[in-house]
Each structure stands twice: as structure tokens, then as C-alpha cells.
Length: 590
Image (cartoon, rainbow, N blue to C red):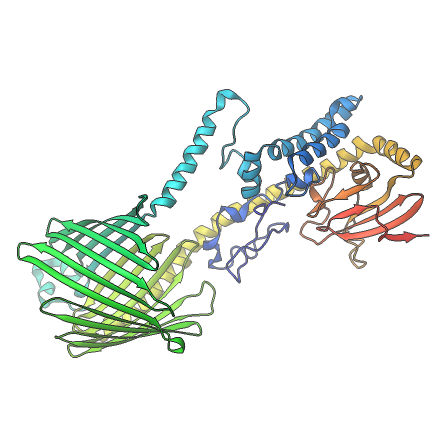
């Protein structure tokens, strides 16, 4: 079967396992928040055909092998080969099925789409295939346009970030003036204010002489005043292990700023970079510099030292990162002429579903201290949600909510109080978890359960209709080829060739044999005999012409009793194994 023919969600790992033919059930889909990780690929029809198996071909078959296989089946199934009207009708259906497979595999372009995306790749739902009707060539242009849009989106690497700061300190630090009669009912409504807003975006552009060219912009607002920058960043490898980066930006509230950095990757996991900044303003030229050195310290982790400054001030920062089991610990120092700050941070990935991350950080200096703790986790297939509490002196209590979706990021820092108070710390820690649990349980989960139930019902209907259709194909093939089968075994028997006397496809477990009875497929296999030989390729046999799967989702086997050279043989193989008849290795029956 094609790789994307069907999938079933694994609630424990949060991933989709390999192809499964099990009939869909509600278990595993709607019991917990794993439903947020499902997409349309998890509900594809489970009866998509394998065109290679339909023509009894390997996936690396040549064009000549594809033509020869189609011609052999055409001689058997072409409607003109049958005289009776009812047989012509049955033959036409079977002939059309192999024709569909042949039309896809004979065209290299369609075949590549089928190999990559399965049946959906050559359907009109997602990919538009070159039409046979010249008047409908527009669909080819639509395909090219869609592919160009996807290529454009991947090559530009768009990134967007949005941040909005809120001041809700009035909830915990109510002013007595708000409770007077002058304010009326509004005296009981906390005042909330949007204090900051910041949006930034960037795109990458191709440039022949550069490794990377990025255009970026930023617009910011803070308590009534705003500003922004527009800039370009370029990167190029100038020598072995040496990279040069140049950034130029400007804005209405500042003069142009130039930044040049040279980075050199040394041996032994070491690197060094030198940066120079130059800003022009009405106050004159302000040069800045930065020297950074990083090294792999072995068992101690990775260390980095950064020295930055100007004519008047110098700042020295150090950082040490070390991975510990499922977490990472970071030690840092930041020293300047005004203050010295020591910090320690730890990130731990929990061994739970969707791997939530816990963060904990402390910073202490001569001018104050801060404590941060938070949690982040995947809440759906493409979304990450996080909440972090920051308690600092001075600075107060701040709750930061972050949402990241692919290359887009949204951040909401909420100032709860200007002073360190127990109430905002408690409610800032508990409230986000309660709100998320309530919204998920009362709204999101019921809505998604309804959506999943509809998808499951659609898949269940497809399963039932597909099962009936496959059974009808099996019965029609038996009716159509019954007389031909007699002719084929007579011809093979008279020449001492290969006669498929009995063939069963299904489960042969003694305990379940009477419940899951195999189906007879000797007629189907005899029709595939060529030059006194039968070759079955590796892969599921269910899509061979005239086959029917009696036990969806179960591991099946193929048992064949055949006569060759007047001797009886017996062979039994797994469904996915290839098979060649006759063979001296097969059991000889006296």
C-alpha cells in the first residue's frame, strides 16, 4: 500500500505509526487532548489502491515491465475477449481498474507524484494532474502556480513576532480614589492598560554572491511614544571556517546603525567572533565593539565569554551550559561598571505526553534580584503554549504568556504589581492553569471531539462501502474468469506446466480458522501464470487483480497447492513476502 494510504493515531507516543488496515474506532481518538494533534492525514480512506500490486510489479519496475504486465492482464480482462453481455460488463470494470493503474505508472510525472503522495497525489483534490483534454490545460498551470507558491514560502523563510504588554496592577493595587462616589460603578472595575506593543518580521531573499540575505523590520510602541527600524542583514563565507555578517538598519527615531561581525570556527569545538557597531545620531558617532569566544569544555559543557563596550563603559558576560539527563543547566555572570549579576537557570523536559518543559531561573546582583519559573508544552500539532512568572526587586510581578505557531510567535507580558505581593504571585501562578483547563475542557475539547466524530463517521462509511466494493470485485472476477481458469489449467496440465490446484489467502491459525475463514484465490493466481511460472512481488497481496481481504487489519498468509511436472507441491508464505513458482524448495507431496 502507499505510505499515506491510512494512518492511526498513537495516543501514547503522539505520532502516527505505519500503515494500518484496522477498521476505525473511536478509542484512541477522543479520550484525551491527543485529538488536538490529528490532521486530515489521520482520516484518509483506508481503501486506496496500490497500483504496483494491481499490476503485480515491484516499485522499481521499468517502463518495459509496466507495459508487459499491462498487456498480459489486458489479454485476459479486455471486454472484447468475452462474448456474453454480462461478462463484457464485468470485464469492463476489471479492465478499467488496471487501466487506471497503468495510466499513472506509465507517465513518469504522475508516477513520481504517486510515489510521493499515494493515490491522493494523483487525485484532483490536492495535486492537479496534466489532463488528457487539451482544452483543460489550465489545471497544469494551476499545479505549477501552487508549487511555486509553496517553493516561495519555503525560500523566503518568513518569521513574525508580536508582543503586547499589559498593565493590570489595579487588580492588586487598587487606589482609594477609585472607590469614591465620583466613579460610580466604574470604581469597582479594575483599570487595565496596554503599555507596550511590538511587532517584528523578517524574510530571506536569494542573492548569488551571499550565503544569506535577510530583510527585517520592527515597529514598537510604549506608553504613547513609538518607533521602529528597517534593516538588512547579509552573511557570506569569506574563507575556510570564516564567516562575515553585516547588518545595516535605520529608523525615524534614530540614525543609521551599522554592525559588522567576523566569526571564525576553530578546532576542538571552539569559535571566536569580533563585532563592531557604529551608530550615527545628532550626538555624533558612537562606536561599540564586541568580542566573543566559545569553547567546548568536555564534561563541563559549553562555555562562552563576551566582552562588549565603548569608550566609556565595558561589559563582560560569561555563560556555561551543560546538558543533564532530560534537562539543561546554565550558569551566567554579567559584570559592568554599575553592577555585577549572577544567574542560574535550569530547563527540564518531563517524561510525559507531549513533553512539557519546566523552567527555573534566579538572578542576583547588587541592584536587585529576580526569580522566574514557568512551563511550556505543545497543545496541538503546530502550537506551543507557555506561561512564565517573573518576580523581581525592583520590578514587581509579571506574568508572560507565549504562543508559538511554526515561525510565528506571540508574547503577552502582563504586569500584575509594581511591588512583590503574595496575591499576584499566587493568582499569577494558578490562574493560567485553571483558565487553560477550563477553556480546554468546556469548549476546545468538546468542539474537537465533535469534529473527530464526524471524521470518524466519514471514515467508517468509507470502510463499509469499500469492504462491500472489494467483495464485489472478488465475486465478479470469479464469475468472469471461471471458464478461462479451466482453459488455463488444461493447457498447463497437458504441457506439464504450472497448475494452481488450490490457493487460500487469509488466517490459518487453528483457533481462529473457522471464525476468519480464508478465501480461495486459485483462479486469480492461475491468471497470473506466464511461461509456466508465477512471480508475485513483495508487498500486500490484497490489491492483486480479483483479490479480497477477508480479515482487515490482521496478518495474513498465502497457502498454495500446485502441480508442476505431474508432482504436487505445497508452499505457504507471509502476505508481504515475494514468491516464485515452481521451486525445488517447496514441499513435495507424495
